Image (tube, rainbow, N blue to C red):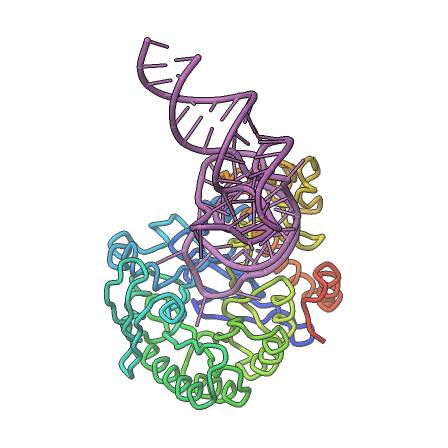
Length: 375
RNA sequence: GCGAACGUAGCUCAGUAGGUAGAGCACACGGUUGUGGCCCGUGUGGUCGUGGGUUCAAGUCCCAUCGUUCGCC
């Protein structure tokens, strides 16, 4: 018998962990990649497509869903799962990142953050409590605390003040949403910019609060690969061994494997879906830019080793044609493939950890994506 | 037949007062990391319809010629 929030580490290989996170909508095997479905859909895909790609959990976004269609509207329909007909776990980002990256005229106070909608300019206010209430209405399985994502290059003083505010907000989120309520889990978010000691301080303070998991936020915001790697190496081991660790917004195939190697369990990124729409596809042979003229009459599948619907059915010439013609089917077929690749990458990592050969698995992928990992 | 306008990059067009050509699209190649199906960067590409003339210098002024379009007979 298991309860939402239970997390079991089943196997280890170095710092890499193979685990299981229990939620109200099922078990999430880790390490896992979570496709991003910001406004209630993984762009261009149906739930059936996600099931076929073996997606275990997807993301939604509090900021976007609150603005449109509205969280109360969702609550009246039984929440986002019911509305979008996705019966597996959903994680919702708190919207903290969007408030800081999308909206204009934001004002941060102790109480929360006032911002303007990127859609119609209307004024809104997010407090930690409000963000919990919205995510309760959405009904996500894993909720994120409201945090301030510090921009790259922020000085130490600003970063430290911001981190402390994020901690106070995190505590208010936990108080507004006690552990176990509605079977919804709540994750804290480690901030601290690119100062290792501040990251450690943030982690220490958050661990005093009883969260179901811990995320590392504020990465992949313009820093070098080396800085990102250094930071995850130093931060991940500080987090509890018996709780899931989530690296937010990352990343490329190698970023993910490098994260797993430092002990991270969960990843999300727009890269596979956004790049699919822009013609960059991830394959067992490396990155393929499907718009290249060399594929004009190439009748081979995109990736002969891939078992996704796109690769089983269509030629590179056809995929290039669809892309060049801006056909809607291009978005869909490319997204089906890229999502499949990222999920397969994580599945392969899980198996490799179980079999104690994660390093070899990682090296094999690195051979195909060279230059992605700084020494 | 007469009159007028226009012929500049593959396409649609800018080119001011004459000083040896630009844009958008297209094409080519990159980029995209808690997603406004967005977008950004770089690049290839033109004997300025043709032939003369004036001038130190002509896409720009003059003449002729070919072509396109419109109007009038």
